[in-house]
Image 1: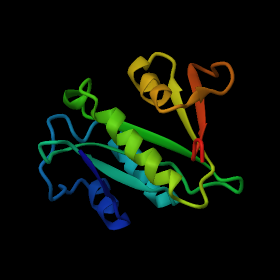
Image 2: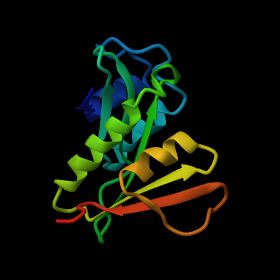
Image 3: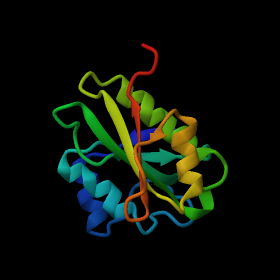
Image 4: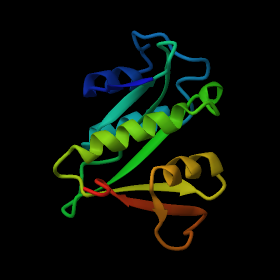
Length: 149
């Protein structure tokens, strides 16, 4: 598994419906792919998730640049056929490590539907904790970018 950063011109091509010049896993792009990759236009950093077979299986990244306090929200998604094998957890862990190396990032956040138990487990395993009660069916998770250091 590896992450490949998505450039703005690649996002523009995908939004026009043009194919990516990489082999893709069945079911990718999924229903949230264009929204997720579109965060590049808002200054977020987005990455393609490349599975162990070299296929584009999903995407992950930030929804915007860090705010004035160094907080940044992440999002991630995989093709349905690529779920349930630990790929999402590995991708999000690599994203969190990358964010921890960015000097302007101090806090990492994720907003996840209460019903999305697998996604909630991914962030919980990485040290995120729920920050308050659910709001409109979502939990907001948060963790320090750099733990223990």
